Amino acid sequence: MNRISVSMLAACGVLASFPAAAADPDLQALREEIAQMKRSYEQRIDALEKRLAGAEATANKAAPASASGAASAGGRGAATGFNPDVSLILQGAMTKTQREPASWTLQGFVPAGEPEEVGPPRRKGLSLRESELVLSANVDPNFRGHLNLALSPENTIAVEEAWFQTLGLGNGLTLKGGRFLSGIGYQNEQHPHTWDFADAPLAYAAFFGNRLTAEGLQLKWLAPTETWIELGLEAGRDSAFPGSDRNKNGSALGAVFARTGGDVGISGSWRAGLSAVGTRPAERGFSQTDTTGNANTVAFSGNSRTVGADFVWKWAPNGNPGERNFKLQAEAFRRVESGDLSCVDAAGAGAGNCGVRLAGTYDATQSGFYVQGVYQFMPHWRVGYRYDRLDSGNAAIGLVNSGALAAADLPQFAAWKPRRDTVMIDYASSEFARLRFQFARDVSRGPGLVDNQFWLQYVMSIGAHGAHKF
Image (cartoon, rainbow, N blue to C red; front, side):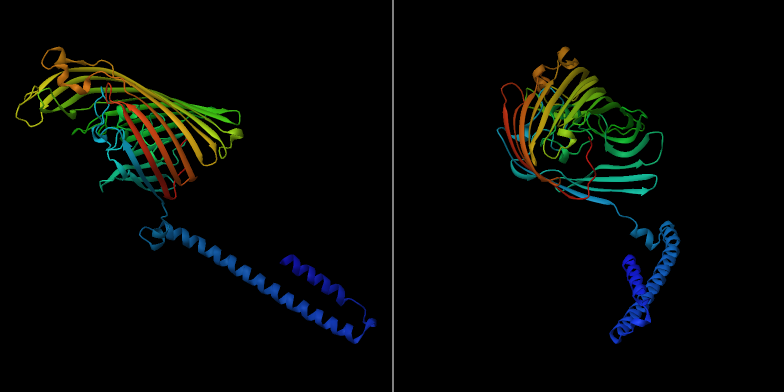
């Protein structure tokens, strides 16, 4: 607008400089009209300059006042400054299983028991899955806070995550405290709505009850190198499986992890990691029935150590995953447990083969892995395949070796190699909405107990949600 005004004034000046000899009534009238336009533009420009100066002065006075108002505790300005990211994840599924879903178990492995849906869905037909309500925001320039509430189909609310994280420790260090998903492995830190399949791999179900939750502190260090290298250390309570809730002070869970990764050209990228976690469960139990038909509670106390390795490869033509992309993901775990195994009559009457209480030693080495690939063959559409395999090993059970109990009295510990094949196809109308069909042939229950499982799942995301991990 200023350029137009200056050009108009210049034109007015040129026309006004014509000699008076050319005094013609029409020309004289034109000169007067141009002079009026010139005075009008000068007045408008002067008014605009005054308004600009006033606005700048007001802004300069308001800035310090805003800063002091935000800093004052309990002021009205402080309340309006809190603006967290809020998101709601809705999940549900129509499921059909060949066998009764509530009786599903991993033969040869101690049942995790928690969270509620370890393995296939516990309900037939259309039902809600665990949904999430997430709030996250910077507390101040030094800390960030995060709360994740799990909304279960049983109309209960549980705190899945509640942690603070530092923002400016420097030297590549980040400290997190509270309840959080452990950094071990690759998939453990991911919430179910980001999984590429409707359920967790069998290895996660067997060793971590779908995912390991830590309650304590986590320290990460990002190395100042060209190649991405991250190291992590965790310590805290071991109330979650494979640990148990213990009425004891101090830390009973410890975990370490290391990972590295990088790019291969412009189309490929990779990540590889190693991790280890140790817990000391006390009376970590589950219910069973012995050969007399009597209900018993079997409990393990001792040391549980799990080590794992993970690898992920991602490919997208020219680094653009919008049209096509492929993801290969694999993890393997090995767990060693040693301690004592007890068997108690659930009714407390001393009935059945376990009596009031029997106890002996327990040693087991178990392993498992999964490999999966997901290919987006066109925008919005993906297909995937996952292969799961576990090995329960042959546990050394003192109660059985001593003859106090028969192996049939502890049916859950019978050796088995669970396996499962899963295929899926899903459609994402956007990054906020996904529909998935999945079929699995599950051979986890034991010899000859094949279970064909069908899923039709929906995942909907509402509100602001942080970027997903690599």
